[in-house]
Length: 373
Image (cartoon, rainbow, N blue to C red):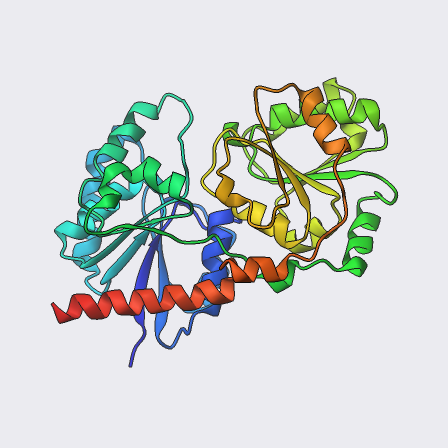
């Protein structure tokens, strides 16, 4: 028998939290039964593209979703699904824009259509009216509703989740064993960072408005005033990175902040940190916070993040209305020991081995039910 092919709909398969989580599931799937293919919305190659192809997946490229080009994009979606009748299940991860893909899939007769919410807000920018339109257009195009947290599901789907297809909160799981604390790895990373004997505060995330790096650096400046040997480690890329590097230089912090770019060794990098700092303006349920907890780190996070993210009791919430100095006090008065959190994460369903098995069974059962109708 050939494996069933599941179409995963994403923006681009770079090393973001969502994309890394999908790859963790993909690697653990029984690919003799289930194969992932990807619809991406960028022309450039993603970081995971080569691995996807090596695992037997296919990559279908669509244009970037732009408000001024909706009509052309909708037409291309219709053509795509007409040319690819092999997909009986589409799993869309592009938040409000999933409505467009799933509308085309529904028109084409695709029986199983999952919309998956990964955010609990959109922030405010010039595209907001179009994004609100896309969210409103969700209607009945999905017939399964997934979310990383209840807050994220209620934000995207509203009252629709209380109908015949209730919301499924699917945990943002991580490979727990890979992130478990290892003292030898910690020493290696701290040697590489020239951080031995220093307080190392870490953050991993794309440099964009959502992640709030400007406030993060203000917080670190307040920490630095009280602990001049403290080190801030920032992993990620994004359009605001250069501006944050200039800010660090202007504040005289360049020698105390490491801009590491995209890293392929996040599990190792977390070992070298003493505390994880995450002042996002909005999130769904961030995978990186589960990873940080799996590494046993204490995390100081914004109160915009759902309480569902505190799986281990290692999160301390702070308001973005508080001053950087208040945040600095939370950091400096914290504990820095790495706790063993593996069992707590496994018990609550945050290990990829458990969740990959559940997801594979869900796909097979949904397709079987559709075939039986």
